[in-house]
Image 1: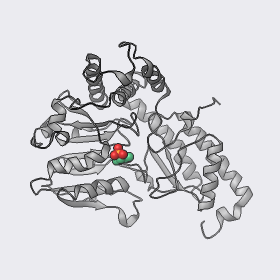
Image 2: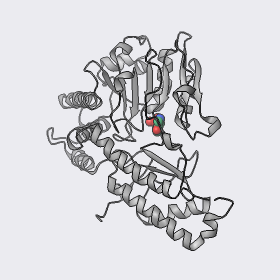
Image 3: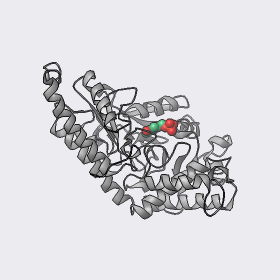
Image 4: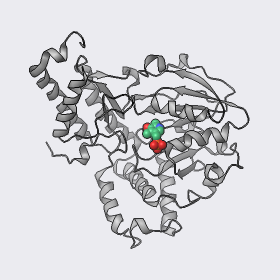
Length: 379
Ligand SMILES: *Cc1c(COP(=O)(O)O)cnc(C)c1O
């Protein structure tokens, strides 16, 4: 088997691993961007070169997602967290209410922020089920007069992913796709707004993509302070103030890789599916030992989250995985356990290698401490 580098075995929940070819181009750009003759860290955001970077990135995003040229693609700062606040500050000013799905850790954060700006209606909450599953359409309580409907397509912490587009088409649908944007094709024209920071799937931290349908854009207020005003950001073509040039250039390289090397989101989705399949296969084959957290129908293709029979075995798993070269497998601090994040940049061979390791680990464990692993208290 080909020997994978430490970076290729990075299963971190975020920031995630980026493709090696992108890292190599960034390495070059750090010293000198070939067309410019300057380090990427010293190129003016007002330069013609950077205007082209922004232009090509907007175009790549629209092309990959199948969006019309009228769709606004903004590069903003403040992460997904800023959008949690900015969105309700823009849309709930006139006493209107918005529908939110509470499906896990990150939607909880979004709700907590939005409550400060206005009234919310909970369309569904998975709290009683410890966020182990997502709602069916029948369970969703959607208001027809909501200012907007908000949900998170992939709950990064719990490993839950919507495999359909929930919500009503007559209410603006807004989605945080921070951990699965550009991982697969989708029906993206049905969204009024999509936002995603770069650092899980499409680049380094520092930039957040905000994608706005033009008819929705026209309904947004224009009298808010500049930094939280979508019109001001859009009019400035993402150069409202000094933008993170390095992060934006990195995302451009990732979209070029997706478009030209991978051949589009369809191919990307196939590779992501293959990675998820090989890990979930181990969970399914050894459900007594590897205990998947998410309901099978709602399993994420980005974050495979599971527990082992007890904390002691989990510790042994982390130690041996580290010795075998894997990193980033610890679950989110809020819930513990194990999380293998298999974002776009991770190669199929890395997921296969982890699946092999999991098989071997389980066998070794059965031999050395079968009673602990399979004692009645945990089995
Ligand atoms: C990581 C994550 C966030 C937090 O994003 P920041 O850029 O750190 O603000 C928000 N939403 C989702 C779905 C995430 O995975």
